[in-house]
Length: 203
Image (cartoon, rainbow, N blue to C red; front, top):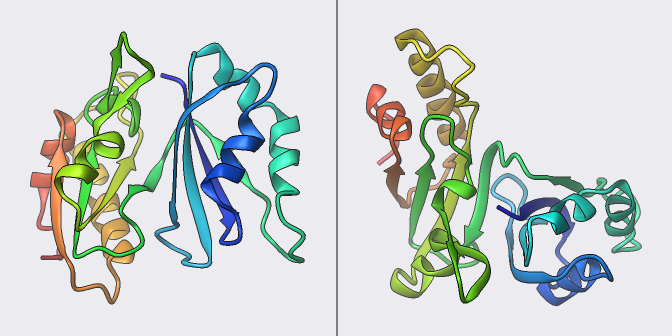
């Protein structure tokens, strides 16, 4: 799919500003989300979906990273980070005011964002239902995806699954520190096994 993640965006930056920065002669933004970062409420994270896959390569180019790093004049602002691997947590919707957390884990050989995306003939870039559809149905939820290395090339043994589960639980506890909101976990394939492997320690 043709989506990137942009991290460390200052709070002074709007969604329209992000879209403008990635709309060039070689890239066209189809959809964009902009939410508070899960680990730093003074920064934002964006998911930017382009009309075509080939535009993703242009968006990942170093020139765009430099351009985005100049999006604000604030001194000491961390460099903008752009990637398409989506490892760790990424808030995709509902991060401002929420009552519950919905967290989705992809499956074997999957991808944190692309697993939940489907091509659609009338929707350029496809539909990522957790970002594009779910918020209209569950208006009080912060929707987050979690990415980890589930490659078929890597060890898929029980011990490896246990390690995925341990790292996820540790990350989830950090994610939910001092946060008493309810959590709904969604697992696809291996993601479901990772969730079941051990208690999460959050409720």
